[in-house]
Length: 102
Length: 248
Image (spheres, helix red, strand yellow):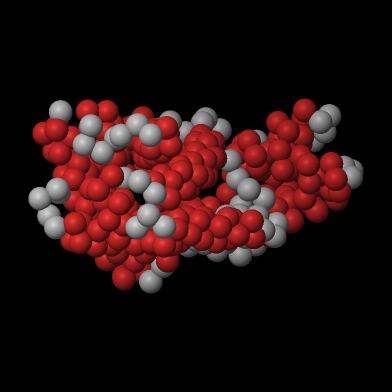
């Protein structure tokens, strides 16, 4: 599965704003997403936004980046411009529909 | 025990019919394949295979030809139903993985091969009378497919629990995934015991052991199906009440 646009956007912005290498930035975002219960290929911008606000600052601080919250705020401002499309084929969407049977 | 097993079995088959028909109607409305696959899978495996095999094996008052025909139809429903469940696993949990598609083909081919081996080997009359022949190994294929289902659903449930802490998952959907995992685990356990007994030559059909296992598995399946796909509003309210998103 290809990485989602939200994941790619956050990784490249984190790399640009934090002086992390590409590998470090992607690894950090991957860990935060795993902690949040998302796969990198399916996370949507609105979900990524919550991860940026609630989990990423701590991840960045633990990696010695003091301005973690500021960086996350800046990335959040950009991510809301990404198109947010809800897929109908994720396991969550499928199991959500299954109770709609009448 | 016979009456308890029969009542549990009837309840399970009835719930299976109702749930699967609702899912098939949903599939007609949405045009989506997952609800069609799971609806067909439940109808064929839980709603038809089990009762057909029970009639074919245990209705000794019927002519042998009729019993053989009933178990053949039962085998066909098992092949189609278990294949539907395997395809559901692939399309819903692993749509991008080619190994999952290959695994579905292998499982379906194994089911067809067992049926062909029974047809051209000892025959279905022997299966109906004595539960003997290659088709007895079908429970092992069931063990593998249900184990795969429960692993995928369990993994997805653990992801949904983490999302729910952030307020990013509906607690009702998380709960449904948990119940589906339990239902598949029940199927793994039941199939594993049946498969082991058949492999070891321990008779299960019509025995106290078989009846007890059938009663437990059927009762649990009926409860899980009901809670997952036709949950009463009081149950849904309690699920939502228990859900507590993480503080920001």
